[in-house]
Length: 492
Image 1 (tube, rainbow, N blue to C red):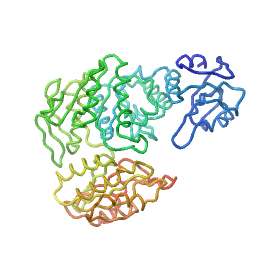
Image 2 (cartoon, rainbow, N blue to C red):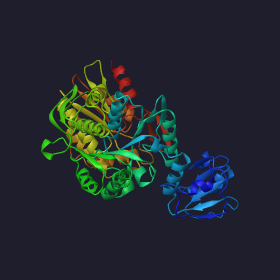
Image 3 (cartoon, rainbow, N blue to C red):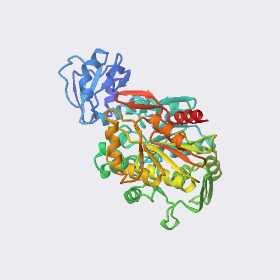
Image 4 (cartoon, rainbow, N blue to C red):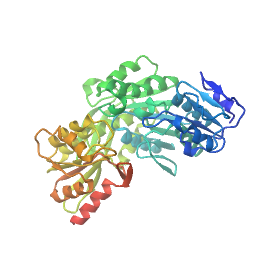
């Protein structure tokens, strides 16, 4: 594609060493990925600035640069200067990959917790209805027979548009995307045509990045205030049990977007609510009142929070016009989501649950659900990630100690922080309750298994589907599911 054709989507911009007739054969934001005739996007980042790598990109064959300021290190290739490089590269990527989101029905799911399970449920509904959905999310990016590891919940703009183009080319009809607050803040999804948006909840997380809950909410709200109104017949599905969801509902009234509200409480008068609900260790059974009539859902997922996830998916199915019988079959057919209340049974009569819960709210919801079905003790193994929001550490410590019979504090992904310092900050919330400290996560899991008796439930929280642990700058293989299975086998 000619540079001049790409630049049609930018305004304002300045250009130096102009040669707008050159061909652009790719766009890269990593100078190591630049090839001959690529456009290099010098994106500002949290830890480093892409501007530093402009000379490297030029050496690797870049035929043009887009940045927020001029570079004196290159003289002979065009430099396109824009006020916001991230917003610009998102628009350029949409143009370069031929607006792929407009060739799919795109659904965005955002919120602190529940995004992954909700996308799996919506995917199941679309498949049941005969469609061919793709998914972009925390566990992986998948469509047809293609599965791609997910370095980010939501990819950078150039990667995202390439994946969407590949989805459409392989015959996908829909894409369900987990849309992170970072992606919305960093303009990664700018230019995407979202037909539907789901808001699950908002609780304390990522304040190391956003600073305040208000800023965190503003990032999430962009999906509903800026993107959905641009697409005809768009709809929003909103959890009005959540205070931020209620605020979003008020804001949505200023747009023409159809809003489908859901609540666990029939008196709240949401569009979707349970007339009957029952929770057991076998799962959920509920009769939902919906705009499409009563829908009976039976699921092997556990707890009230998963009924909320189911209602968000049901709302999406209704927004897409999926038949109620297909919605019911899809919910019952999804037996488990990897790393989301994933259950492992021991021959000694106890079981383990592996879950991604890594915020105070998620841990509270998980342990409350487990407490409601537990026949004996709950043994919780958890930690908090390094280089992330420190404010949630004592909160998680208090919740784990209060709702567990035995709490084992260990490491999550300590990254560049001292694991023992992270543990101290978790301890600050425990307030005199009994707990055990074992910094080595593998040893902590082994200890939980040795302590477990018949009827007990071990909860491994924080890492869920992850198959690695980050200590310092090194990422080493580590899988909670495999570790608990090995520990159980050694015990047997």
